[in-house]
Image 1 (cartoon, one colour):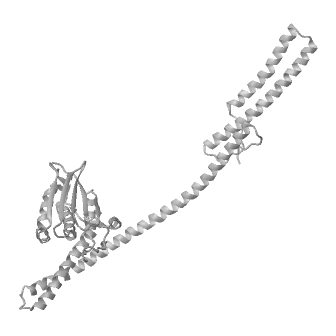
Image 2: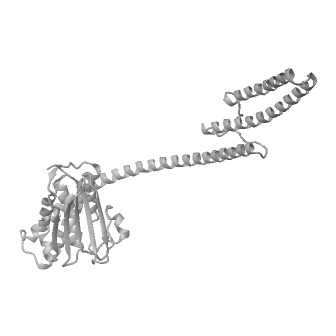
Image 3: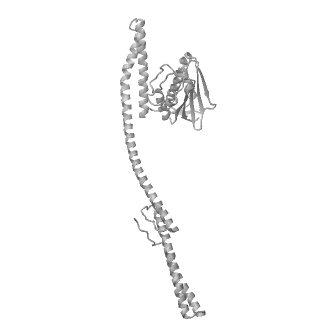
Length: 370
């Protein structure tokens, strides 16, 4: 434990000056009285009494000042971060209470510092573990993307062949087929088409995750993209008698985007809205001018998404357990791809939904230049 020193403090020098004054002033007073009023014997007695009182007073003052100096030294050391200094004192006067209070503060600070050091060691260890885990997950994700890309490439060619040959037979180019054969071949062709779309989605996702997708960025009109995509769903919208409405802000600025990629995003959101909206429902596509971005929303009156499912709706391969729609399912990749595309554009995408009332999917894109 560090010992406190009075050296170097101005109060210590002041104490020496006070001691000298308390010795000199009584002597001067006695000398004056001797020359004026008192006999020598009385003078001597007066001087002895005066000096004795002065020494006693000085002793008391000096002890009190030394206590204050000790406290000041301890407070300065603690303020500078030295928590090993000892300022504890014995007694029951105010100075002792102050010293003991400072000692308690030092002790508590020391205990808190030890606890913080232990927690900091724990945090550093946890940070290292998280960092190592993140590195492993990044590597595993990279390997997963490479595996998906490899498998998808290997599947593409045989699927194309299966689909092509099935359609050749269905068209009668190889001879007549009966109704049962036609039914089975139609199932084969549809399944091959569905598998081909899944493979294409897997390849797109793999390229987006690896950053290998080249964005052809430029200033485009979001309303033109929306109208173009809607034309591709004319048959589905007509079959379900869905009322489709567009709501575009006046003087909507262009967005800075890759039009083909944004078509894929709008197409996915619109396809989902059509799929999960009952016949006779409504779908509205909005495009609103924001502060620095244009916000696009696809609003439907469909079955909605449970609240507990919404945080995971954009995860890869995640599909909502849907009891409203008789088993309508997908690959679970469309929204994940849409999210990746929007984020590559520097935007965001999210959902608000309530079961039985519908869903609102909204994404944002940076404004372009007029």
